[in-house]
Amino acid sequence: MKQYDYELTFKVRDYECDLQGIVNNANYQHYLEHTRHEFLLSRGISFSELHEKGIDAVIARIEIAFKCPLRSKDEFVSKLNIRKEGIKNVFYQDIYRLPDMKLCIRAKAENVCLVQGELKECPELEEKLNVFYAPQLSK
Amino acid sequence: MKQYDYELTFKVRDYECDLQGIVNNANYQHYLEHTRHEFLLSRGISFSELHEKGIDAVIARIEIAFKCPLRSKDEFVSKLNIRKEGIKNVFYQDIYRLPDMKLCIRAKAENVCLVQGELKECPELEEKLNVFYAPQLSK
Amino acid sequence: MKQYDYELTFKVRDYECDLQGIVNNANYQHYLEHTRHEFLLSRGISFSELHEKGIDAVIARIEIAFKCPLRSKDEFVSKLNIRKEGIKNVFYQDIYRLPDMKLCIRAKAENVCLVQGELKECPELEEKLNVFYAPQLSK
Amino acid sequence: MKQYDYELTFKVRDYECDLQGIVNNANYQHYLEHTRHEFLLSRGISFSELHEKGIDAVIARIEIAFKCPLRSKDEFVSKLNIRKEGIKNVFYQDIYRLPDMKLCIRAKAENVCLVQGELKECPELEEKLNVFYAPQLSK
Image (cartoon, rainbow over all chains, first blue to last red; front, top):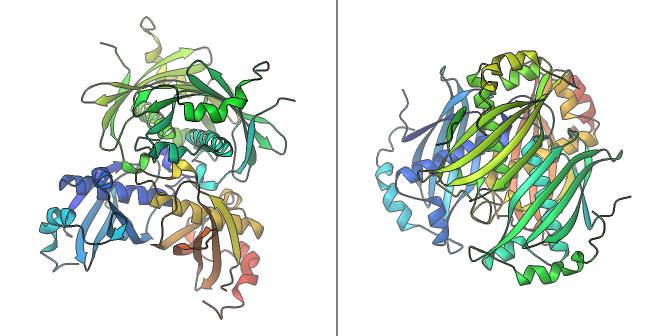
């Protein structure tokens, strides 16, 4: 059973579905983003407070494989692992439908920091995330 | 034929439709907001620049009558009138489907200004809008 | 203390905030809609299944008073009462910020049914909602 | 100068910006999707009509590189090329800010067809797209 650093449970909201009757692709980016921000918050890092200090965590690149669509009334769990890769924090994110745990989304989101608009390491962020970088054996 | 202070043409985007195959209600607020912001811009008023100066134009109250749903591929025109009513700028907004001009949305949006967080008159805004308040005969 | 027929707790997601740093107006319609749909589901009525049977519950008119903005990280509770008024089901909906219970949104949403595209009573819906119409003393 | 099969001009709408004051990542997927659907429409293929016939064009995988953020009031052009790669239609999509043509987004979206829920070739779609597959020399 794969281990994750963080997970969050959601329920599809009907307005997130499009005329095909399935969750519109862009909304998965919303789910993935909200999961990352809640994970950061659980580590004492507030996305909005960082912004007010002139630090913007931004996604430089994302890959999303859409394995199985979510529909009205579906509940699902969004899980993530974080790995430090050079200057980037890379989030490996999977979304599973509940209760059958069918894999719906597999994503990789590469995050970088802009400090006063310049791409650089953000010590404030790294310190609080540090504990997660140790066991890079799996994945 | 009713006169309007401003109008803007749109086309429905498929992601704006929900599982009923019609534009989701909340998206009409998006259309109405974008029309107001483009109108303001046409008068030299930038919503985002106002915000950076500590002036936030916010909607205090909105009423929307949903007359006829828009669907995939529909084009439509969003029209507005602005009236000064006390401290508020009130936008009367109608959305008509093209080309048959069927009325889809009739809305009234009451806008107030927060200057450094406090409700007050915003001279910067009023001066540029001033010309629109004169002929209050119709409506 | 006001009584409600149903309530649901949410947390603001950062993507719901706009460049003013507050939840964008249109997203309150999303919160209100999701609350109504979850309420219906709690009564055994599925919005998406109704649609598949040719029955579309649609909002004919909405009024929203924006009392206090929600921000990043805010939690809130969305409450509703339902009243039968002629052919319409009218939802009276309030959103309160947690934990201080400050009133953020007061809304009234008038719902009608389209059965195979025609405006009419929907017995399937009314039967399941029936119990809620009795005590119309308050409100 | 790179050649494209199709292009569409947009303007950022303020509600698409998040609390960082830049367009929220998920909205680029909306721009990319709308560009693909308008391209299909220009070839006589309607996404919504396909759905009504039981044919769903869905994205199986997307990669997006976020090169430069778009902001309030920015105009931009969204361009695409389409290539047939096995059973997939692959869209290579770039978004450039106007008027300086700075590259903002580089994306690759892999599209497949579900016919009555089963993954298969969709002759109806392929026939109308056919002309685009010939010159695979560039890219």
